[in-house]
Length: 426
Image (cartoon, rainbow, N blue to C red; front, side):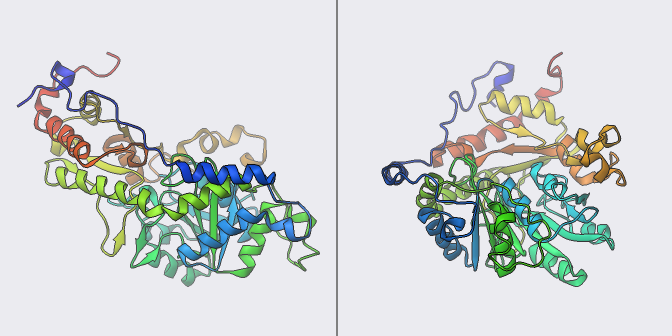
């Protein structure tokens, strides 16, 4: 058996992986045409035709609606902005509770706070890392206004069950689908099951515009309210005849014509960008299936996984090696990865030190409690189990995919040799 690189052997992957590039000639030509038009943004923050943006923005929104089979798409300058617009549109008010997972990018839990809502954290499923329906059910109270589900790493949350639960309690379901374009549950695209779905076009996603996001909905009222929140709502409520002005304090969440032009070209080839990531992940899963103590990603029956991240779980007891040692050995073999994703969000200082905050967030969170151990599955995944390969970051052909798998197998086969490895920093 070849010696581990961390102990002096030759690494499986001696050179860094090539970064994945999505930009090409089509995007460059689209940008050139916009620059020549001299219209880099078509928005005006006042009533009129340009309240809804310029020609590329409108074309991009129409194309997105057609691709994902929705009635309305509202473009925004980031998925974070989209989540905030969605919370505003569904009417979140101070003290309203929004159930969120703790294992997600921080913007998910911050969005309710913009309107004085209170994030309530429910634990996740250990195999898909998405909201656990039973945990959500236990978290519902008379103050619950919405469930904000995250299709984490590109796997759909249990969307049909969450939709049924939301309908049962008369609350809203919003999807954070930043990582899941072309993911699906029972044939329905992720991001289209909730009252609102929010997609990301940030530069490290499957397709991107540098910064940007898309909000989708079949609800005419929600679409209008998100359009207004996006673009200085206070100026147009009378023009649109809107009586309920709850949360219609406008922001500037507008997407530029340049970004929309790039997004159109990216959307036209979305399958070309997502497909290779799925094939890479499936190769890694096949090569790690059955290795003692290693648990590759599981795909729930009826679901399509988009694999923004390929997330491997390590059972330290079954594998007989600490995650830290396994990770260091894997890195030495040239396998780029991270451990733990993000700390469960309720452990951030914003939630743990709220009593010291005299501002609005401190007042909003004053009645809540966010103790360590609140979501034990999420904490265990972060602290002990998760090893993550960002499939969207690298340009990996079939041969390199197999070598990545070989790196994992090599470390696993030699894991006993890691027993005497000194901890990092020792």
